[in-house]
Image (cartoon, rainbow, N blue to C red):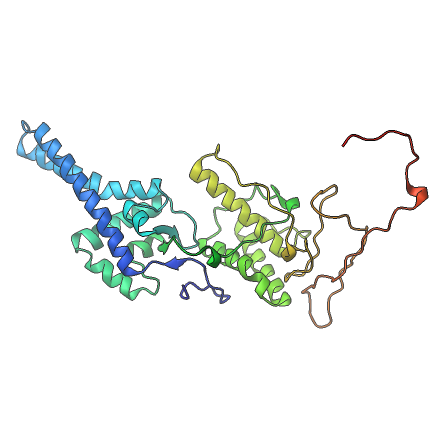
Length: 332
């Protein structure tokens, strides 16, 4: 777990799988694939006994490629990295940024796995896993994937604060195809650890990540959105797209996010140090007096703001401000 560290010295929560558990999962997968190969091949040979030897050899090769190569690729693609052996051992194949794998990742892993697992009896895969700091074989290195332990204590899992409600759906039109997995990983790890950082350090890191993200998307970051909230909103949009791609457009979407946490100024001063400014009529936050809680940067802090400790509340209504009594009681 300590090897998964970004350039900002933030540890990733995912735990790389150890070699024994990976080897056991591969053996289980190979056993199932060989049994299926023998059964199907026997049936095909019996059904094609009248064909010549060349035709039977071609069918045997086709069955080998289909079941021992195409089978694992199809299973990992459809199960999003959970084959039968990995499911039994509590493992899963994910991308370097922790997201679900796609067909291209499973294809690269499967094709290289034929060489380093089947043709060399797993010797190359074992050596590569022992040399790699995260236990990755050659297929994982070329595919940009990682086998991790899926069954971990819930308390160890990092929590990514949701973006403020007023940013919901604001970045649906962004082109996220050019954003690399490493940047997504850095953003996710920053959001899970920003409350543990110094406010000025957290603000500068958020600005740097927001600038990198805006450069990859081709659209400038909004000036009216704090950098940390911008990162959280774009990350949530990306996760929503991944969910729609994995489970279909008709799949249920996660519930709307709760009110902005303290990290974005919704429940008090957070480490990123920016006041939460809701849209007009937002029912999730108490009203704030117009022009209240102006931002004053601390001395020597440069452009790194710090959230105010007190937010002024609106004064109590005076009798002359109250509407005249009409005797009408509004419905509940």
